[in-house]
Amino acid sequence: MKYQLKLKHFIAGNWVGGSESFKSSPSSGSSHSFPAGTNELVDQAVKDAEKAFITYSQTSRQDRANFLRVIAEEIDALGDAITAIAGEETGLPSARLEGERGRTCGQLRMFSDVLEKGDYLDCRHDVALPERTPLPRPELRLMQLPVGPVAVFGASNFPLAFSAAGGDTASALAAGCPVVVKAHQAHPGTSDLVAQAIESAIHRTGMPGGVFSMVHGGSRLVGEALVKHPLISAVGFTGSLVGGRALFDLCAQRPIPIPFFGELGSVNPMFILPGAAVERAEEIGRGWAASLTMGAGQFCTNPGIIVVLEGESADNLVDAAKVALAGAAPQTMLTDRIAVAYKEGQKRISHTSGVRSVLTSTCDRRQATPYLYETDGSTWLADASLGHEIFGPLGLIVKALDFEQMLEVAKRLDGQLTCTLHTTDDDIEYGCALMPILTRKAGRVLANAYPTGVEVCDAMVHGGPYPASTNFGATSVGSMAIRRFLRPVCFQDIPVSLLPADIS
Image (cartoon, rainbow, N blue to C red):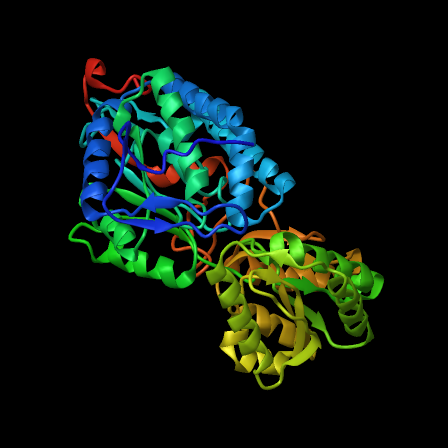
């Protein structure tokens, strides 16, 4: 499929070049030269976003809903071209990318529905009580309003669903907030085409040009300039703990701090209760292997750790997982940097005292193959590093001495995106003991399933206590994600003619 890249930044309706550039590093196909971002370009994009906010924040819910649906239409219209370049840049198969495009467009359409329903506004009204004693009560109305321009960072592992027009962008635009995207260097061409789709939607719907801008990276300074800009009101980020924490700290250190909604990392542990281990150890081992290797383990919800009571059932689970993982074909990792980090993480685990190798393999460049290790509960509890995420298809099985030690492992966990229970009717007592711990540790708790993947729907939560995310009260997936970019405003005795249309 042929496609025409602009090979420029998209700033408030204009395609803008630059004096310095960087080369893309595709998994296959031709490399392209993209202009590097600068502080000046960031400043221009954010100032244009602030200008657009005055108009865009006042648009009707229906107009914004239509805008999001048109963006989805335009992305679908470029579907084959997007799949082609995204496949070259990331090495992801076409089926995965087509599914991700469907999810991306589905998110946009979901937020269109959210806008039309209007429930997200959380409107409240307390009528005046002028005769109340000892003091009268004024008339009070409450409504959620957009916060202002939002910075969005494209994610390396999702070139569509968590990038230029991904969930952060969709929810911010739905809220009434213009967006400035920092495109990820792992897939700049994909972001280029998506920006073209958004450009077409802006023209078709008559939205202000500054409602969306995209600046390419080239250096860490571009991201820093974006989060430090005084006109940026909030930040959405999906990425590494190190990078996210650095940006989080910058947001907190600003003269006027702003919220940083970062999804940073998770090992997504699975707890296998005794009854489930006896009944279906082999089945769980095979299912876990499939979940662990999906997308070369490059999902935020990849289940990197299993916790099970030691014994014959645990051994059966290990054996089944080993056989399944041994048959897994090599998969291309998204970037050279991710591949290097995976190998470094594997070496760290393999050199940890008390950790035993079950399955080893050889990774070639960006090709990832699975590794499997096991350890006992005491070793895991004594070494906090064993609870840190390794981004890739590496699994660690923790064999707890008894249920009390399993509970202790759960208590020692950092914040997680997901925690999973495998259970039977005979495990109710164990499950009841674990649930208060797991619900405190994770944003999503599953039973008898595998956490890889995130459904886009009203009830979904994709977030959790730190370091899973930087704001445990927020989610980056699901209809509630719009709340991140809204703030409550109370109107006291304001004449109806001055009130927002949705509250009057």
